[in-house]
Length: 273
Image (cartoon, rainbow, N blue to C red):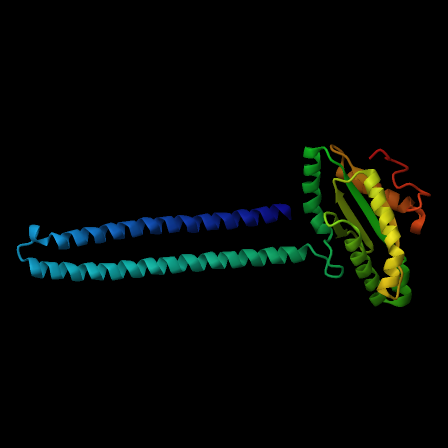
């Protein structure tokens, strides 16, 4: 998808450059027209040097000059109109394509990024982290009880749980953190420039805000969030870090045990990451 976007952007830039080239040719043509007009005016001014019958020749030259101005002016106006219209159509198509692509990267239910966006954003953040020697925290969050709620209370309540969880996560984590829907009942939080300790504090803050959120939201459900976390360090394997976060998700207890420190998020296999 990233390659497709780059290809579309490159094609748009090439088309714009082609239009700019045609505009440059039009400016050259306009310069030639102005030069011819200046030459005609010169001949009119000094017509006695070139024609024996000055009045009639001057009038004929004047009419010919006026006709040429009208023809060239109409042609230049037509070319400029076509160039402007082509540029507007290209820009409209590019914007439309960007909107379509943006919609393709957004989960329609939760209005968070979907898993397709992960292929774009994670390599970018990893390249940045490798250049700067920074770490990235990957927090995998699962809405526990979602399958049971769907079975017992229906799809509507189950969807409300996912929407509520997405809203809660977007308002709880930092604005620079990226929230993605990662599976049916899971979300992935990408936290750039974040250490293991900072990520642990963010998860604790999330649990601290969960009960007040339940009281304020008046939703017909309560969220029970399971967390698995791993931290990417420069040079590590990103896929292995995601798998590590998923392994910790399966091994973590449900609810506030993690926030209370009963099972530290960085414990277990690969705790140095």
